[in-house]
Structures are given as C-alpha cells and as structure tokens.
Length: 458
Image 1 (cartoon, rainbow, N blue to C red):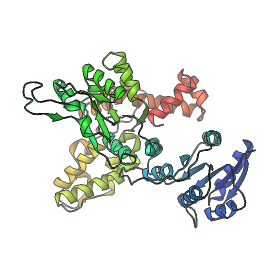
Image 2: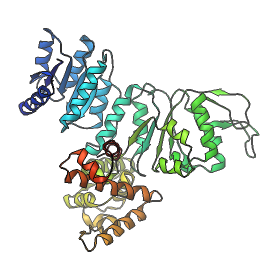
Image 3: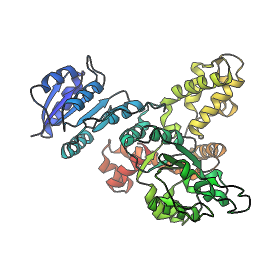
C-alpha cells in the first residue's frame, strides 16, 4: 500500500483528502504544517507528498526545496488557492510533479497521484526559473499557467491557439524566458504582415543579387534566432510554398538563403501561434498536414478576455499605470461604476482592446477619476440584451455584429468556440457535472468531451 502524506493548515481539507485517498486504497497521513513534515521525514519517507503553499511556518515551496535537496524519488504535488502564473512556474521549476489549483476534482487528483507513483521522478537539483509578467488569476488561465510551468525545463515546439488580441506573443515570450534558452535571442515574426513574395527572404535571408533589390546579403530570422527561439505569429497565413521550406528546416535543421548554395545549420526552438483553426485549414488544403503535426507538439489554448473577466480589474490598473508612466500623465483611477461597465462589456478585441481603451482614457479623460461618461462610445453605449424565447435570435445577431465590428478576421472561430462552450456547460449542468452523461447528451464520446473542455479552457 502506497504511503501518501498531505500537508495543509486547513483541517477540513485534510479530512476530505484523507477520506478520499484512503477509500482509494492509499495509506494516508496528514500534517498541519511543513515543519511537521520535515520532522517526520527524519524517521521515514512516504511514496508521495501533497502540500499546500500557504501554511504557518515553512511554506510549501520551502518544503519542496527541502525535499529536493535531501531526498531522492519523492514526488511532490503542490496545491494552492493562489493561482497566478508565478505559482505554476515556481512549482514546476522547483521540481514539483504537478501543480493543482484549488478547488480541484478529487478523481482527477487521484489519477495524478497514480501517475506520479508510476513515474517516481527524481526532482533533486531542479531550480526555479525567472519571473513572469503575465497578469491573471482567473480559473480560465490556469491551463495556460500550468502549461508554461510544465514546459519551463524543455525546448519543446509549442502551438499557441487563441483569438486575436489575447496575448499570444506575451505567452511565447514567457515560454522563452522560462526555458533553458532564456539568455539567447527571442525573434518574433508575424506572417500576416509580410507580403507573400518576401516571406522566404524574411525567414531564411538572401544573398546579394538574389533578386531585384537585393543589393546586399541579408541575414534571415532563423539565423538571428540561432540558439534561441523563433516565434512565428499567425502561422496560418504562411503561403504553402514557404510551409514546405519551413517543414524541411524543422526536419533537417538546415536551410539555404534565397540565392545561396551553401547549407546553413541552425538550432532554433519554434513557437507558433494562430487565431485560425488549423484543422480546418488542413481540410481546405491551405495548410500542410505534416507541418501541422510538426508544430502541434504541445498546444496551449489562450482564453478570450470574455472568459476571464475577473482579471479585467488587475489588467486595467496595470495598463493605466503603464500608459501614465510612458505618457507622463497623471495616473487615472477607475470609479466603481466605470469598472462595472468594463466588466459587462464583451471585449471582442480581447486584452489588446482593453489596453487600447486604457491608453485612450489616459489621453482623453479630463480628470484623474474616470467616470462612466468618460468611456469610449462603444463601451458606455453597450447594452446587454436580455435573451428570451422570442428574441434569442435578435440577441445572437446583435452579439455577432458587435464582434464583427471589432475584429478584422476570425469571426467564425470566435462564434463557434463561444457556442460550443455554452453547449458543454449546459450539458454539464444538466448532468450535475458527470462527464459521461454530458458526453452522451452532446452525442460525443467522453474523450472528445474531455479534449474539447481542455482546449476551450473549461
């Protein structure tokens, strides 16, 4: 029987976990502090430890470090209600097997424990990674935080999927900054901004005289990123011919400059991003299937701002402070009513739109205190339509029109993902959270439901 120790200063949580894990066949002991765990470790060691972060005396991270420094092969699972990005990075970077934000599903935790006991990883010697500047403590951001934390010691290829304006480049930078390549170049290239005929020159460079206007040799982004990370934003807009060359570079780790005859070796980590559905593009023959699978090694789904509205307050304060400093303006402070308006609004342009609104307020608000009447017209005049059985189509059309007015592309992906989330949440509510019953109601398999919930951040 596997021995599991649980450290948490909340007696109710200890009781629930002890009862649940004991019924699953584990030998469970509980502790109210990390100091008690350290004392008991001198007498014997368990097969696995679950620890809270915030406890009297020794913190969970300190306990994790103590175990790393003094013991081999004890998986540690971090539990925390402080669900920000740094918590995930510190947990995984410090050697935790898993990071679990509270509240959590007991069945899923039991599955994690079983995986940890099978692997019995060695955590000794792992070190924490640099800080991150991503803002957000919402539940919908936890999948993003956990992914970045888990990837902090790797150089795996990553595909970031999310609506325009959700902060995909910021996440790519965090992946780079918290990776073994953190002190090497991070080079970003937006494929949607480059004329089709110049894509290969941008990526691979060119030799003097390679084409009209090539008056000198030019080093491409792959060479600039050598040893570091190349971030290819809006990868779905890459022309097919260039996709073929990119696939060859990813396979052989070498390329030729345009007009060149000598192969150039590179060691580059690729992080790609898109707001488009690459599966659909593959079906439409506008994106190579083999390149898709080469890029889609690890996928991170970034939630839209509408699904993380509890983060709006912190994000708005951050942007207002940032713009007041850069513009030399007095710091604007949002009134309670103004913040309520921001929380009601749909944000089709996501975090980028919120940042632009904060810039506008910093420049245009006549006084330090921001009131509702100071808001841009599209926000203060925004109406939440009460949907009834007779006007639901009108409400849906109004919502789609609002999105269309604030997006340049990707309207179909935005609408479809929102509708699918509503379907899943309705099915889960109908089934009291039982995924098997929800999947049957939807007409899906359970694995399909689990996969879509993960992808959509539910």
